[in-house]
Each structure stands twice: as C-alpha cells, then as structure tokens.
Amino acid sequence: MDFSITPVPIWLSALFLITFFFIPPFLIANAAKKAYDQAGLSNGNKIKKNIQFFYWIYLISIGLISLTGAFTVNTLPPRIIIITVIPLFLFYIFYISRKDWFTIVLNNIRLEQLIFIHVFRFVGVFFFFVHYYGALPKLFANVGGIGDILSAALVFPVIYIIKRKMKWAKTVVWIWNIIGLADIVSVLVIAIYVTRQAIQNGENGVLEFGAFPFSWIPAFAPATIIFLHILVFRKLLEKKLRNNS
Image (cartoon, rainbow, N blue to C red; front, side, top):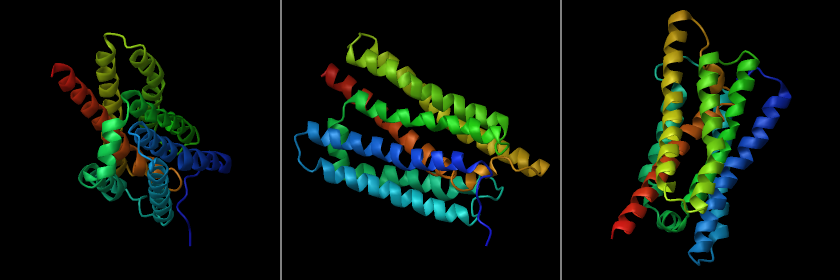
C-alpha cells in the first residue's frame, strides 16, 4: 500500500512532527492549568494532562487517516475542511464551551495568557518550507506563512502593552485579535480559491497539505485558532462590561 506523504525531505517532516505534536497541545494545556491554579483549584495538572491527551489522540487519528490519501483529493470545499475543520470547531463551540472545567478556565485565565497560546503560529514558517520543495502554491504559502508569523510575532508586544497597563492596551488587543482572525479566515478562503483553480487546470493545488504529516495544520489550526480568537473577544467584552458596572 502506498502512503500519502508530503514530498519533502525527511528532516523537515521530522522537525514538523516533533514541533507540532508537542508545542500547540502544551501551550493550550498549560494555559488551562495556570487558570486552574489562579482559581485556587488543585486539579490543574489533571486538566492539563487530559487536554494534551485529547490533542495527541486527535493528531494521531488525523495522521493515520491522511496516510490513506483520504484528504488528497481535489474537491470543493477541500475534503479536509469538511472532515476535520468544521467538526472540530463545532466540538469546541457546542461541547467544550459547555463544560464546567472550561468555564473555570475562561473565568480565571488572564488575557495575556490566552494570547500567548498564539505563539504556536510560528509554525507558519513550514508553509514556506513546503513551498520551497514544490509542494504548495506560492500564493497559499505566502498568505498562510506571513499571516501566521506576523500574528505570532505581535503576541510579544501586545502582552508587553497589557502588562504595562497602558491606557490603549484594549484597543491594541482588539486590533491584534482582528488581524489574527482575518489571517486564518483568509487562509481558508485562499485554500478554497486555489483548490477551485487546481480543479479547473488539473493541478495539485493545496493537496499536499492533506497528506501526512502536514495535514495536521489544516486539521488542527483553523478551528483552534478561530475558537481562541473568539475567547479573546469574550474576555475583552466581559472586561468592558465589568469596567462599566
């Protein structure tokens, strides 16, 4: 049986696998643990382990599915969006958001801790690597790579401004959050556009992001990033309401 694997050097795939398997789940799980610690609750470590375990199982499952070639078929919208992005986002909205432990996390996590999770978007550099080895269109690589790296890099000045309690800190967070959300939405839009062009012209388009291991990016990042941005908006609105009360 032939496995569906993105045609890049082994060292690049290995670097991506290690980076993506450990860093994003750790950042999310660690932020949840800190929220529990700040609430004075003792089971933060359990929450952290459960979150990491969930993401590891999810990524392993997506990896196995992508090896079969299930996502490397040009369809509109891209099959991986239908099978992974939408279900994961709905899972966040309709299941995770209603759990008691999540309410504790959201109520106690600091805005800067929630924003810091987005440093994992430095993995956007892999868009350029995969394009360099001829497996992604330039337009898609540039939109995805530049937007993610910019969103991640801006995390540090935004957090600095928050911690310094500058009077325009909220405005800066609003702007950063809108930029970060616009980036991930634009990536989805470009993916659909490039796929449509690929179907018309008999090209691969973004198919290699449906192959292992880079299928993890579309399967995990869009839904998770959009959900995290929604949480930042919620924190900003709650803070505004509390300040006005």
